[in-house]
Image (cartoon, rainbow, N blue to C red; front, side, top):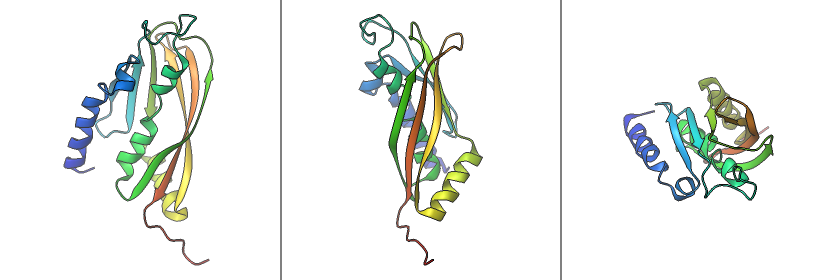
Length: 159
């Protein structure tokens, strides 16, 4: 990634915690890799993100996981590709009763595999698992995010 892109995305990451859906849900990006291949988020349980039973609102648990695999691919693949969230599923394993955390990471080899598949096929939907865990590491929720990737201007070779 060139220096200007790195600078652009570093600025975006400093501002993301002020993004209203995160700010008003108690969600914060607490760490990310310099090359933007990993993000770590935190959701603190507060009066404004609790459900009727006093545990973390399911929408907030999902929101803390929503854009990060898409961000990684958008940043890593560059402007030659269209990257968009396509699918999501969430399984609530146990109530979130305190601060919870999630981590999103793609290795360079995973990114290369996606790029190779999209360069060959023109597009694809790629699924990534994620877990939300409490402060002692117990699973609160399991998610699967499906991210659509398409190469701009792709034309299939004649078969």
